[in-house]
Length: 131
Length: 123
Image (cartoon, rainbow over all chains, first blue to last red; front, side, top):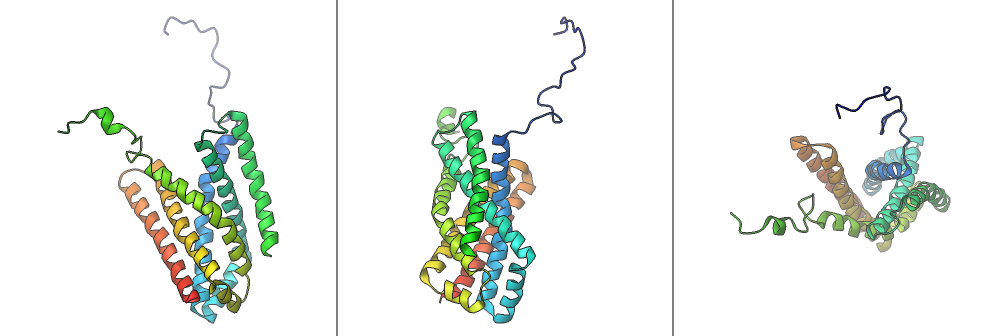
């Protein structure tokens, strides 16, 4: 490469360049699967603690129920609900991918959007159903 | 010395050195949870926010109790194995081992606590 003459310094961004890199749907939907799956442990811990308190005594239940139904509890459970639906749809997509389907870029991107939009829709439906 | 060709030793075991067992286990638990979770969300969501009597009444029935137990056991196994994969991706050496042991232990503690609560309510 030493004998290659450079006419001008390279002015275009070198790829992949972090400042101009367009984040792709396939990457976002993949990392969201991992994040939602692990974050769900928070909702599970709160839910199990609430169940333990219900099984133990009135006083313990009063404490746990106050936390579980506070704004903090609402935040954790609503967040967990969205996370579980996202992880659910992304998991189904994973099984679909594993079977060798939907691996072309346009389909994979559409499926990513389906997970994001579908999870929000399912979260709203679930909240309406259990109210 | 093992009288076995390198090819034979590697076959079917992949980069994880354990074959497809972990992946298959995740697939099986994922399909199980796909059936369990939507129904469980409804049962748990209905119980949440009610009085203690109503909660005890709900989980004293076989269906909600067994469903919740299955979600906890299958779900926490699924979590432990998923967390193991994540830790293997980001940590090495002793840190990796300690984090994996912590994740698996935490999963069992959560499952056991939930099962204890269920047993106390259902029995």
